[in-house]
Amino acid sequence: MITSAERAHILARAYVPEHLPHYVTAISQTEPFLIGDFVAHVRGNAQLIFVGYPLDENFDAVRMLDALERARTRFKPSIVSILAPALPDALRDCTPLPPDEYYRLDVTTLVIPQKTRNMLTRARREVTIREGKFGKEHQRLVEEFLRAHHLDDATRAIFQRVHEYAKCPTVCVIEARNARGNLVAFDMADFGAAQYAFYMFNFRATQSNIPGASDLLLAHIIERARAEGKRYVNLGLGIDAGVTFFKRKWGAVPFLKHCACVQQSSRADAWLGLFEQLQRV
Image (tube, rainbow, N blue to C red; front, side, top):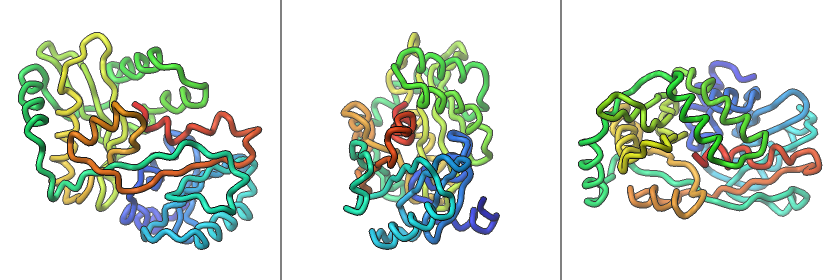
């Protein structure tokens, strides 16, 4: 486990969501560790999730491989999941996942495009945004999402633990409610890092979709990030054309490559989509 001083060190420098100890612990039931300048998450002696993004943001493949080897020696995992801005040739025995990119907004210079401002104006006529607490209504939208998407058992189990992540003190549940007070969408954002706010989850009601509701939720995250002195909002991965369009229309730009692989794939099938799937809502 990490010490309180190590946790503070991580949060002072975190720039990808997988750096956040409380996030990964709540979702995947792991324990966080600091290996040099790298964060690792360990589940018993079976699984190691190695976050190959150094906290000082200066990626060096040799340094990453050295820390990875130290983590392997220390924890002796049977399954190793690695995510990093690049996968060195030394990891050729890994089973790779499709590459992607993290998107972010610089809230200190952001100018919201006119079309997006028009969408916000329209949506404000139909929904009200507020911060709330995760409850039965929110769980219902999560369950709607699970029914509407074909997910493997491991990924489904991850989404079923969203309510545990909502208990973390740095997590904000932001709601969009219609004129009757019904929950039509909600976001979960994390404000625990010093320079970054993290856009983590977005769930929408299938029967009462209101155009622009998700834009209003993101606008609230941006406003709060500014108020708390953050510089960036990390919007997560591109995922697909639709998700990428939503992020780009706000002015988000890709700022970091996302590569991932799994070693000992014969036992790792359930682990392959862990962090990619966490971004797919």
